[in-house]
Length: 356
Image (cartoon, rainbow, N blue to C red; front, side, top):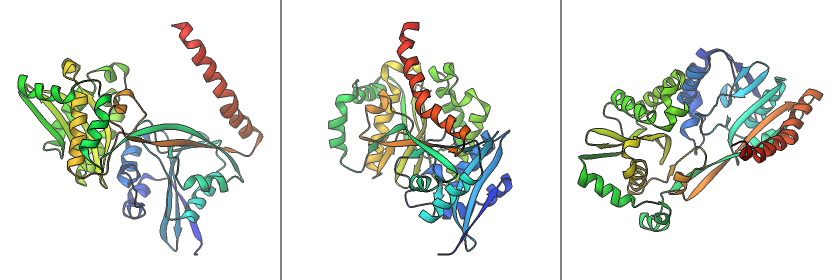
């Protein structure tokens, strides 16, 4: 096999120019978060003050792998944060994956941080082979619920209905009976700017706005989701869901339809309509639509939660990989994370109820 040549890209213009080659590298199970447009939007929104560091490996001039990182002080970190459901290096084969990990290790960073990796990602084998200059810690991170919609809807309904905790189908009928109701479920936007503005306002109207985690709570976050919406609308993959009651937006969903799977990025509902459970009614309607359209799954993303458990049939587990230099300092940092930090967290959880 031809020798691989590595290069490190540090100019955003180099990232922009890589688009066609990047997307041609995507595997058969590619997710929206693997696409080039996802990373360009991420960097434009969150990259200020950091140094872009993308490793690209080529075989006979052809792109064989990319590892999108940035430098944060002396650390190398994945181009990912709380708005990145999944992160993974992209490699054409095991040799390219190993080359990416070896290049990352050779940078002699104080730390290499790769969060939200699928637990079965091929790069984890490459990490094990890159133990020369770095020592890696791989630890469980979180599990994302999934609704398998490739089977029979009636069977799913019979199994999940006992978990709904509310008569969602009756609430849906009540919406149509007692209100002027409009349900738009898993549809391309008709007026992108208006629908985003209305949806983001609803998402920020409840506890997310109060906690500062809503899209509109931070201008960088708002810019990121608008860029994502525009990019995937241009690809024909953006899907929005809405429940409007008496002219008021009661629930909103921001999703991407990619390769037969519907990925949930953001959702929210107006708490003034809480008695009708508009968010759950909308989720039921979305799952129904996924079955009707023959989609393979509705990916709920993020961490497990009570409302997701009402609908989910399975989950995807993720891990976090952290590399430390094979030095005394690196060994101390690794020991702190693997041995001392878990004990401190356990002690904190034990003491926390006493503080309330």
